[in-house]
Length: 372
Ligand SMILES: Cc1cc2nc3c(=O)[nH]c(=O)nc-3n(C[C@H](O)[C@H](O)[C@H](O)COP(=O)(O)OP(=O)(O)OC[C@H]3O[C@@H](n4cnc5c(N)ncnc54)[C@H](O)[C@@H]3O)c2cc1C
Image (cartoon, rainbow, N blue to C red; front, side, top):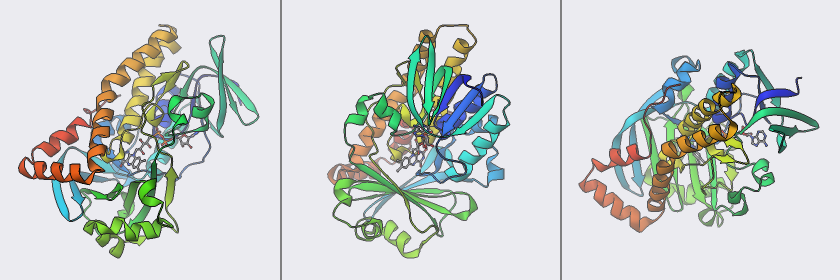
């Protein structure tokens, strides 16, 4: 296996895969991820249509993968209900299928190399990055970190967000459940909210975010589902009628929504590694893919010796802030409202009087359609 690459990407989720496909069309690219494909991942699996053309340019055919079209949102809070058309709409597809499809595209590229493993260290010397993975070391002209919400590398690089404990955990499971294909449900409960929507194969994905504070008095996920989530009438109906497809759900903890930076130590950060938007916006996957496109476009002139590294990194940083900074802010603001019952009641009343405000709020958390 070669030791030198133009680009090394750590993390083969949506961000890492997108950047790796784009860059391996021209440059020797090494993608490193600890897991083989396909694999289930914690995610609401509602993909905003803003990146649909990018994915299709990368060779993804949603109809062949059996994805469903989603264009309606239903929001519930205890017994109250609001609904809205989704301005851009979305696509329901599992990460199991989407990540595998992207990985297949990457493997078709002549300059692509995949290594199953974990990047444990990165150093920069003489304008090159040296990456450690197990007992091996590799060097590259540029390093991209796409390691998701939280990783060992964040700790190694002493990124500020890693030092604070996060009060969030998340749970995901696929079910058999009868619901319309075109609907995404966002259902609030005490201490969190759950998203329910269809993916390929007529399966329904339930994914929720909850605070430790609300979870800790309950022994396990089943008890929490029955005692807390089921107080919401829609979730009560869901748990009464849905059949779980797996033995146990996927769970993760320590989900941080703290501010991060898109460039640190000369490393390009993409996807959740650069910043995680609150899941209620249903936009993290699109942002991961879009940020990978921005980072790839910014670094290509450097790899072609047409600009210096500093200018390329500054360009990416500028683009990232332009496209995502205000969305993340809006997401933080919405989450504060959604998790405070008094604020939610006021917001619910306002939206009852002025229903046209809901699509406007949704638009503020999303971008425009993106192309490669
Ligand atoms: C509860 C919840 C619900 C959500 N629902 C939605 C939704 O409905 N729609 C939406 O658009 N977004 C949603 N999101 C957000 C979305 O899941 C993320 O924004 C998206 O997965 C980000 O992709 P990524 O490629 O940055 O990271 P990931 O997909 O997490 O990929 C990171 C990869 O890096 C690998 N890795 C980690 N450490 C290392 C290492 N040291 N070396 C090598 N590889 C490493 C990991 O194994 C992983 O494969 C949700 C998030 C949460 C928490």
